[in-house]
Image (cartoon, rainbow, N blue to C red; front, side, top):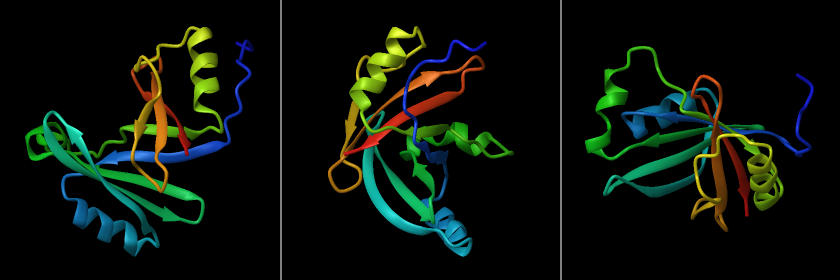
Length: 140
């Protein structure tokens, strides 16, 4: 299968992990040498969650705690859960156009803006053959 698309992917930007206790998870990753480099609220199903980016060197773990009403599924897992892998791109609109034209299963109708980082970011997701989510993300 060598019909790959021509899209510049700089590397893995972050790995997203839903957590049930954001403070305990931050302390855990801090013990491994990660530092909180960004923290922001987000809305999910009418409630407010918390997202924290923990960085060590060029590795970033996105820890996020959903609002209380949305935590049941995460609490029921006994083996952890990686939610998505995010790829860093320089031009989110070009990436979206390229991916969509190539026929990938794109989840969002257009790149989504989040007020994360200093000037925000834009992202969109695709699903892989087994339902895994791959995010394309540009920090603005």
